[in-house]
Length: 200
Image 1 (cartoon, rainbow, N blue to C red):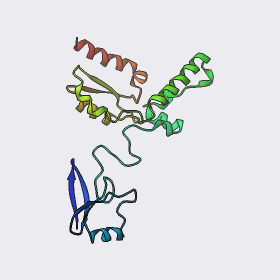
Image 2 (cartoon, helix red, strand yellow):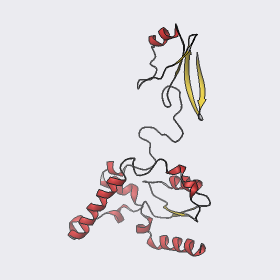
Image 3 (cartoon, rainbow, N blue to C red):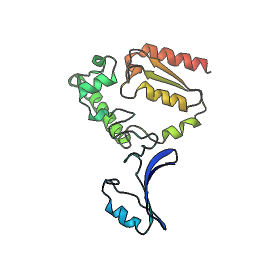
């Protein structure tokens, strides 16, 4: 018999066979393969309950989990520079830097910043997965400023933060990507100033 059980809101496909004392069988990485003689052998002695884990068979993925290549935040470390610039900037030319023209002090600062970024933003990638469970605790006026053309951390991700933070506002900055404060500094400062002055 195959049925669906709901555990913590997730539907799991469950294979159940046999009579007698219940035996829970949790599969390994291959799942419950199409031919499962071991299941039939166990079912001769037990009532075998064998769920497909979330994401295997017809069991749903756990809430908040995506496919292997789906992610909330683009893996910019895995992209060629040109592709990264297209995703991070509304106007990719604004993000181009000629490192050969920078003084040594600025180059050293960039390298140190990238080293720290890799150290703090590597695992888990670029965010703390538990953060969404803490956002409801923010009890101060909150403004989320987002580049309307950000394809690294999309405005849809910002909208999920807005819904999670009580009374938060999300404002998009037109013609800006992942760095609205660099790409549209005047619009960024105007929106931030209006928010701060309105919440004194």
